[in-house]
Image (cartoon, rainbow, N blue to C red; front, side, top):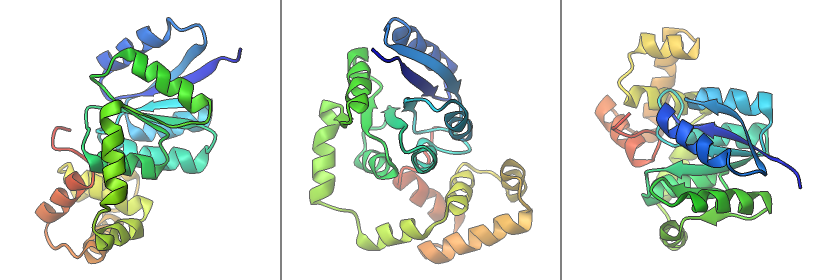
Length: 218
């Protein structure tokens, strides 16, 4: 029986330690690493090549949706399972669209997470019981087509700038975090506003929160 290599991603150390304690009791599972940001998760996924990534959504710098998208692109054989307090339809649908194969709410019993990991390794998808109905609803009642097209046209760097902007970062702070110039940050911001047809930072922040790119509790 092969060992399942797991990477834990959450910006709360106590939660990561709790998850590790649960998973370490399982003989088939080996926790190979931990990450506290989306950027770190992407890097460790490349370096460690885990079978499964247990991914939080609401993290600073790069949220779990963007990190999942990057991991899915770089390592299509790595299975990402969302573990989040958010049960809103947009968060769920955006995570699945980014490539996640499972979505478990944090207040679920730990058996659910173990079942999600097992299901992912068997090539299936797992959703917490309360989440499944949201996905069906999302398929029957899709979001505004114009909003979907606008979101799809944002590049990875533009999505990163939008999240940092929504988190209240200045242009200099964004430039430092992304290792680019302030001028490049401003260019990205203008392009974002043009593509989304939004004119103020407040409108961009509302959009980012609504689309699950960030949350007001970060």
